[in-house]
Image (cartoon, rainbow, N blue to C red):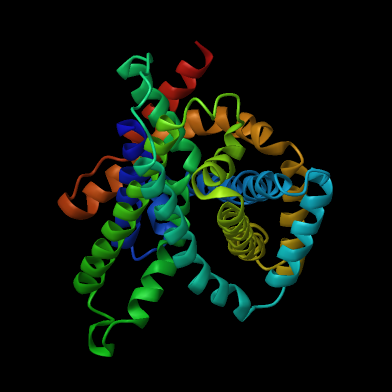
Length: 343
């Protein structure tokens, strides 16, 4: 559990704070490893949080939650419908997504907390776990990679800063120190809530490990919700999870399309074309199913994620203490993880 909290909560908090010190500008952040390597890393990360990773995974998880209640639903059909919905909500700016986010997020958070509290309260003694502590720690670290929250922090910190500025007094909006302090406090709150959810669900899953044996990873939330809340309340919680996945995919689609338009094509490709390309790729990857997507992501994340952690740490130290090194630590970490991958 400690391993998951480090890479799934602590490291994203570090990355978000480091990015905020760079004003949320990922180009300046990645330029410290060199212009071309920095650009290639931004392309890789955008692919991972966009059409090759997070977006299809959101669709696959939404499908796994939905098919529990609609058994005859096929993944290709669901993926096609999901991509169509994403296109309709992303091709033009829609207030509905803002409204969904405003009300769905608190509802989802409340549902998850209810599941955790009730799940722990109704549980008996925790089963004895025979897995060694070191093995559990390494497993938690690796599972933290799959959240890809650090990668999301690199690209969405600018959005966080804009939201924080909008809620500051006009006289303070250009005060970098106050903005960074406010962003750190907001990030700490987010890290606390995220850590609570991770820790709580891990405990509930451990208590209910007997009834969860053989359940695929993408169906665990659904099964736990039904076990704890019953069929009706569990259905509502699962619907909230499915909607949250789709709204996340919509936000990622917009960011990916803009990246293709502005950064990859230098305005030679329109936003609509970039969105179409994004959704075509997303549809193809999403049909691999949740487990297939994880198999695709695993080697990439295991090789690159440690280097991104080192980059976040070096850039953070550079802004705070003037720490000069970044290229050697970054590329040495990348070379080491690449070597270990093939040993």
